[in-house]
Image (tube, rainbow, N blue to C red; front, side):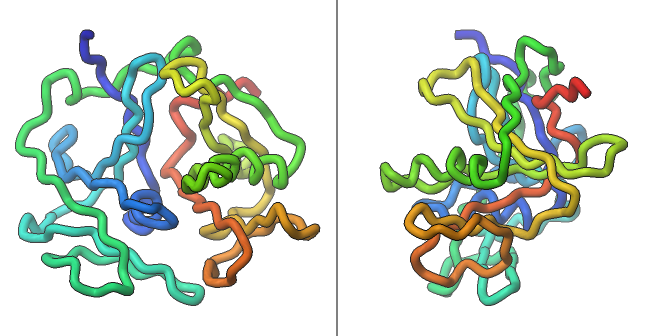
Length: 228
């Protein structure tokens, strides 16, 4: 099968990237350290859409190539993210850093977005519905899907959404989303066993809940076509 140029999606900062690859994962996702258009980035591939890889990345200038792990810890109301040489502290979660010397030429540029190769948008009625979509895999003991957050164009509202393909194929991926007025916190707290509504929080240490990580993008998601 012929390789295709990826879709590159920029994450707002290193904390959001570390949350994506480390937080709430049974096994942290590997972090790829590489140069993209002469800028150093950390990157991770999360899915395929129509056979095209979707890669989330964050710019990180002047990397220390001796660093072997991206270390992440969420404690209390704060997060700690650091680059380390060894994975020695059990209080942290570690994403291994894979240093890429040279990308294949097909990966050096981003695919051009189009309506055909974009998510199919489905607007939900409320935050509870979004939480159910993001958390549905937990019934199979898998981690919840991440929710991506970005400013919605000139309206200055925030779109919150997650991509999902119920058929486990690489095409017809849906983007389930809602729009809110205020920027969310780092996690969404949800329970299917309690009557309370899901709500945003920075604290993930209370038992009996499902926590869904929220990842802030630097700009609108390129695979979500804004038709408004």
